[in-house]
Image (cartoon, rainbow, N blue to C red):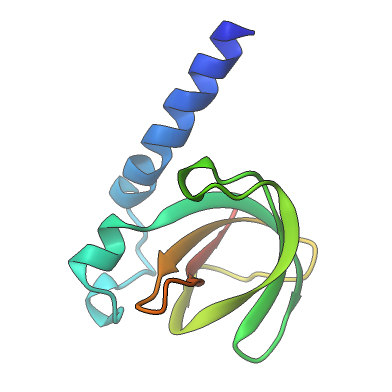
Length: 114
C-alpha cells in the first residue's frame, strides 16, 4: 500500500512537468492568455467529459489533492481561449489543465484526450 501511495504521489507531482514538456505540435502557447503565474499555478487531472456547452463543460474528475477537491462530477467554466487538443467528444477520457482565476475560481485552460 505504501508503494502504491508513493507511486501515486510521484505521478501527481510529476504529471504537470511531463505535460509541460510534451511536444504538442498543434498547441501554440504564445496565443494563450495565461500569465507565467497562472501557468505555474495550473493543476492537472484526469476526467471524463459528460457534456460540453457554451463556455462550460460538465466533467467527472479524479481527486485533485493539490486544491483539496475530492473526485466529483461538476460543471466547470472554460477559459475564453481554452485549448482543445484534438477531437474531444462526450464520453471521452481527458486530461484537464485547470487555471485559478483572479476570482479564486478554477476554469479549464486546456483539455487533451487520453
